[in-house]
Image (cartoon, rainbow, N blue to C red; front, side, top):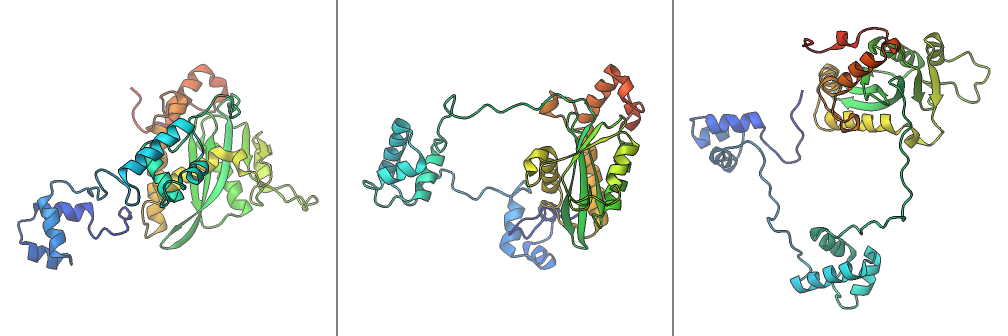
Length: 316
């Protein structure tokens, strides 16, 4: 697996550590690793291998004076006007004030967001309580140096147990096989699967005379209800959209992979950590595996097998 991507870094953590522990001269190290001598000297002096913050210690405006900033802050706190309203009012007395400089000023003083007043926004509705048998499924596109792959992901709405596979295509048969392997990987019976209206999951509206879709056949075979999201409303399947983003942020957006196998290996490690080690606030502390184990103790009739067989370690 590649190193963490960084726009201007010419050294890695391992190379910086080697420079710090090496007894060779700065010139020899610079020649060996094709670095500037100043870079080698900089890391030789430091005791850590992390990048030091390069921004100003005390952020201040290069456009506004201290008196002008004080005027802006006092005006905002007293009037509680919106950003544009503050801009139009203050520009009469502060001629060099722009919208961006005003926004940065408010951010520096922690008043860029107006306090919310009760009754301004409708209260968000909570998710209905579901048992651990409701899965969201979707597909995302990822890339390595070898080319493009399709990431099939499914996540349980309640336990947050995640399952994912990488495939070179996104055909109906691939989605069908993905569902069958998902059913085999989960220790309990799946009641509902929610997907979008993509052709790999369901037939198009104009294909009303077509044979039953392979994905629907698998659902019928295992007694699963296949639900579809409303067209052009991806937020109705928001849990899986968020999981797709989480996986991408932890893999392809953070690391560079030379081969598909590197991505596959890292994805398996990441999912194992999410399912068996990561404690979730939404579950009030336990990991998805621990939550499933508690559900097995309360409702064993929902399960096909003992979930302890899926444990990554000895049960003690």
